[in-house]
Length: 99
Image 1 (cartoon, rainbow, N blue to C red):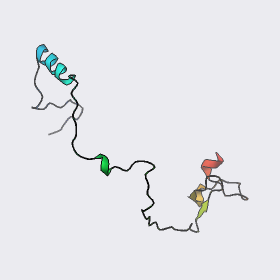
Image 2 (image 1 turned 135 degrees about the vertical axis):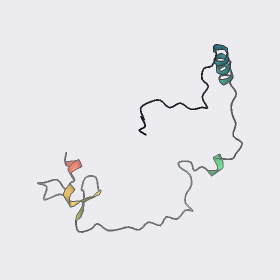
Image 3 (image 1 turned 90 degrees about the horizontal axis):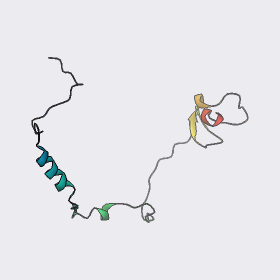
Image 4 (image 1 turned 45 degrees about the vertical axis):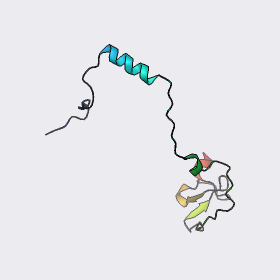
């Protein structure tokens, strides 16, 4: 059987029609001003920008540029040789920086 995915989906959880007083009562409850407070200590597990990370150690493997790559002399990014701007024999400049 083919399914038309453009049609709006109907679920049994949705009420068929609410009366106007019920909708107004629900709206008044939603805007009552009560604030839900989460009691978990989530703030202690978050890292803030500018936090002291002096005791952290990084382990990154650095790979040197390959034979088919070059470093742009303007943006200092490593690009494939197909990204080198033509006519720039004295400098290695990528197509983005040359534009």
